[in-house]
Every structure is written in structure tokens, then in C-alpha cells.
Amino acid sequence: MLFWILAALLTACAVALLVHPLMRSRGGAAARTDYDLAVYRDQLQELERDVARGLLDRDQAEAARAEIGRRMLAADAGRGPQAPAPPSRTSAGRWPAVAIAALLPLAALAVYLPAGHPDLPAQPVASREDAGAPPAVLEALDRLGQELERDPENLQGWVLMAQVYDRMGRHRDAADAYRRALALSQGDPGLATAFAEALVRTDRGIVPEEARRLFEGVLERVPDDPRARYYLALASAQAGDFETALAGWSGLLRASPPDAPWVGMVRQRIAEAATELGRDVASVMPDPSSPGTAAQPSAPAPGPTREQMQAAGEMTAEQRAGMVRGMVDRLAARLAEEPGDADGWLRLARAYRVLGDREKALGAYAGAQRAAPDRPDVLVARAEALIDAAPDGPPPPEALAALRRALEVDPANATALYVLGQDAAEAGRPADAAELWGRLLAQLDPASSEHARLREAIEALKTEALKTGG
Image (tube, rainbow, N blue to C red; front, side):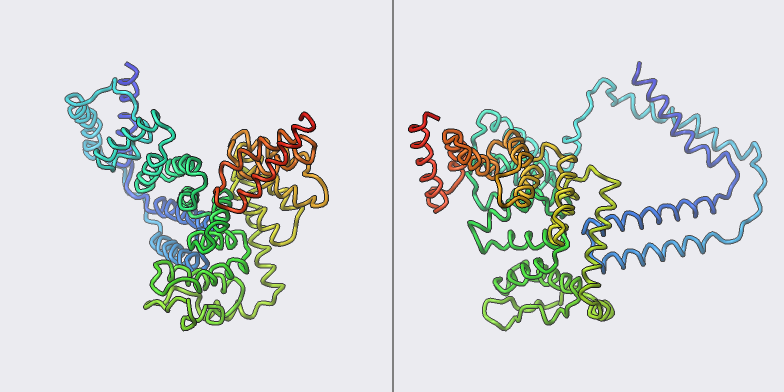
């Protein structure tokens, strides 16, 4: 009965929306124009938000603004002089409205009754997202999920599930599956990179803090990994540190083979960073004729205009610093209105650290923790900032509390295990330190020097614990 009541109400609303234009007098062009202008103004506001988040570069933003402005002028020009109101409709003119009001519900019933099932349960959102996937893929994915429930230690199963989710566009689910696979693989660099890229896709191209840490870990083991180098430079650019970004992308381009698929994209990023710094693109682009550098692409990557380069080149160092400070201030203003954006707070904190403003950086990290109190990457980032702010003493209590919470949420968090183990060792609790570092040791490559050094430290802690009885 509830279904039929709701269906009747929805049908009445639909009929009213269709009948209302037929029942009122003609005209309304001005109202339509006002509506279009309001939509275009909303688009301009959304464009500014995308620029603030780093999703659009300067050229793309200017082109979009110009196009929206052209549409606004066209809409306003189409308003024209106000025409006199036409006479009201006669009763004969109301017959189409009456016919629609009567026939539309009858037609809906005629279509629904033969095939409708009002008692059918609601379809989950995930199923609706998968509506475009082939049935065979969905069936295989379901079987794989059941198999992983029975055998959660199946590394290849988690990898396969992550890859399927990624191809389906379900990047958050892909990231969750990669997280499980990475834990089982004990830190495989290839899986770490795939996991980090899934996190970037989940955040619409923004490099979140957790992804940045993963890419840094990959570079420690594979120093020439091109994806990790590219995304770390991108993270620097998104934090306002264009010097570091330019150096990162330039180094990647020098090390890339001429036919590498990422060469054109890296060249474009170098041009963008050079423009932000007010430098000539040709002077900072690596020489394609020198050994180990990439050849020029057949079609040049989009770059700044001559006017933009001239304007940027005329800026002083103070003016460029002011430009970066303005970007940071705009991000801070947005976060004051939208304090729940944890990744925005992390970007703001990194930007403040680049600018040398330690106190504001700590405040931004605190904002990130308020926005996401249970995210391990947020907790670890704030703890590290607090420890860096007190380099000559033990870790502050706030930092240790954040790391303990991170370890509760993510028992395999390497940073938390190491720092808390070190704190336990310095506090005279060798058994606790050995237990924490033992969990960290299981994640390291047995053939690495880090593994050997940590194993020796654990053995020394165990010996000390036997001597002291603790």
C-alpha cells in the first residue's frame, strides 16, 4: 500500500510539472534567461574551486572562463525587449493539459502492471555502478569475492580484484583491494605504486598524503621508478613548491627513453612549472640531444602563451613569492569554509612548510586530524610534523598519541612501528621495543641492509630484556 501511495504522489508531481507550462500564459523567455545566467554563474564558481584544488592549469581555466563568458553574453543578448503579455488561454486551449493529466497516469499503469514488482528489494548502489559491466565479469568478480572470504591470504586474488575494480572505474574499491594485496606482499614496489595510483584516481588527480608516502617508499627501493618520480613532483606542485616539482620532472625527463609514453606529459608539466616560476621554458627543458634524454615529441606539448611568459618573466622574486602566498591563502580561506577536507588540510600544511611557516603548518595538520581523526596517513603526518618541531628532545606526547592511534587503525603502519619502538627502547622498555620492531621487520626485504640492521637491533633489545627482566 505504501508503494502505491508514493507512486501516486510521484505521478501527481510529474503531471503537475508537465501541465503547468500548458496552463499558464506563453512567454517566460526572460525567466529562462535568468535561469541560464544563474547556471553560468554557478559554473564560474565551480571553475574557481577546480583551479584552487589544482585540477585545472592557468590556460585551461582562462579558456573555460572565456567560453562561459561568451555564453553569458549570448544569453543576455537573447533577452530582448519585454513583449506585452499575451491574453490568457481560453478553455479550448486547456484541453491538451486536461488530456495529459488524465492519460499519463493510465499510460504509466499500463506499462507497469504487466512487468512491475513493487515488492522487489532495492538494488545496492554498487550493483547500479556495475550496470554497464558484462554479466560474465560481474559473475567472476562475485566468485572471486567468495573465494577471498574463504582464503583472505590469497595475494593473487586480491591483485586480480583490484585490477578489475580499476578497469570498472571503482577506484576506491580498487584501492582497498590493493591495500590488502600490498600487506600480503610485504611491500612489493609494483603493488605499492598501483595502490598509490588508485588513491590518486580516487581523489580526482590530487596526490593524497598516503599516496605520497607510498611513492616515497617505492623510490627508496626502486630509485628510477618513473611513476613514483612523476607523482612526487606532482604532489610538490600541488603544494605550491614548483621548484621541487620542476627539478623532479626535469630529472625524470633526462632519465626517460625517447619513446617513453610519458614524455609528452612530463614536458607539459615542466612548461607549467616554468611558467609558475617565471622562467623561460626553453631554458629549463632538458636538451634532447644529450645522452639519456628524451627526444622532442612530434607535436609540441601545450605551453604558455608569449604574453603569459612575458608577464611571468617581468615578476620579481618577491612578486612570485606573493603569487604563491596568494594561492596558499585562497586554499586556507576555502578550508575555513569547508573544514572537512582532510586532504586539503594536508596540502595546506605542506605548502606552509615550503614557505617556512612551521606554526601554521602545525595548525593545518591539526585541522587535517580534526577532519579525519582515524586516517593513518593524517595521524602519521601530524606526528612527524610535531617531532620535526622539537628535534632536540623526545617525541612530544601529542605525536606519540597520534602514532598509537594510527597503529590501532593500521597495525602494519611502518612509521608508527618504528617511532613507537624507538620511544620504547629509549624509555627502558626493551621488550616492547623488540615486539614493535619485530612487526616492522616482517615488512622489510630480507635481502636489504635495513632488514639486517633492524634484526641486529632487535637481538640486542631481546638480550637487554633478558638481563633486566623487562
